[in-house]
Length: 451
Image 1 (spheres, one colour):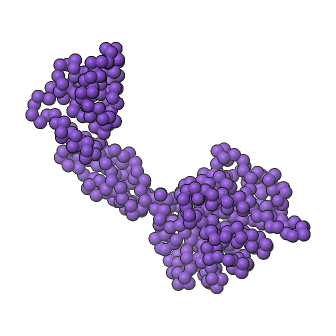
Image 2 (tube, rainbow, N blue to C red; image 1 turned 90 degrees about the vertical axis):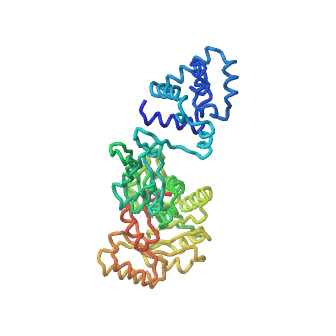
Image 3 (cartoon, rainbow, N blue to C red; image 1 turned 135 degrees about the vertical axis):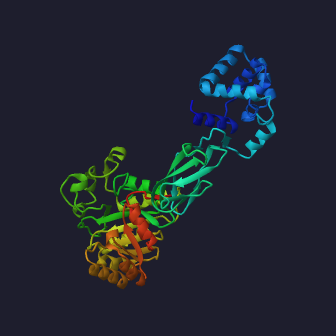
């Protein structure tokens, strides 16, 4: 048994985690040796039992039962724990060699979990931790040398560590924290620290639902987004083919592509389907989580929004956001009214790259909780400026472009227009840079933040 495991075994006992059967075995060993000092002071206090109780139990217990317990103890502890017990027996008579019952009781009350050792070994409890940027966490020790410690970080720009073992996240990435003996650098232990964005640094929306682990734009992807701690979901919307009926009722599906080929393997277009035949087309290709969640159908907008709000209510997320990316320039007035009606007073963001769509929603919008945003992926700086000007003219809440479209001058330009800023990325590093420059919303298919 390694010294590290022995220390953990001792601390488990001191935290009253030692089983009663094992403590009885320790008592038997003390009685056989003829020395009550063989029993560690903390054993009698384990699990709330008293020494008197164990003595009574020892008198009434059968020899076979006690022998079996003693054997189990010897097997668990191996040679390391047995030798340690013998050392305690030999030193029990000398002054100060064994801690008194009163002293050990004080240690337990104080929640003491570390040991000062003379061998110089260092033992960190945590092997790895995850912290948010700008947050701190304390590393704890099982044991440490009496001659002092030196704490260092492999990447101080990612995670700093103070000389009391407190780690502070500085930027997204991974660093290794090392703790070594001040007298002997070969006696050390380490802990891996992963620093992520904090969920309070921005509004994180799950792109196409949590498409990093579940089929995109499906009900499982919406449920997983809520469970993973996202602030909202971004979903793509298509209105189906207008059918010849006396009173037209718009039918809206959730899908990113208008073509069916990528997801279903079949020819055709989403906006040519009807409410009667859309279930024939199954989502089975080029998405994550098919093996786990099975083949999926395209959800309707009603199913998607109800699922999101139901899961959000269960999770206590009252301000959960649904962002609807309207793909069609020619979405009908009836479809716009239906989306606004479904949204009600919930937090819903309408996002589109088509100014015609924004104008329609602006005309029929009832509540301010339905925000209007615009998204574009423009190639030149001049086109990007023109897009920002158009957004300002339409009086939308904010604008979104991919990270590569933004530079410092464009960010300043958009802020002068009093527009909020957003982006879409799966890169924590890219998200960090833009958040530091004032971006309030990040749409991502991966969980690049920590709760």
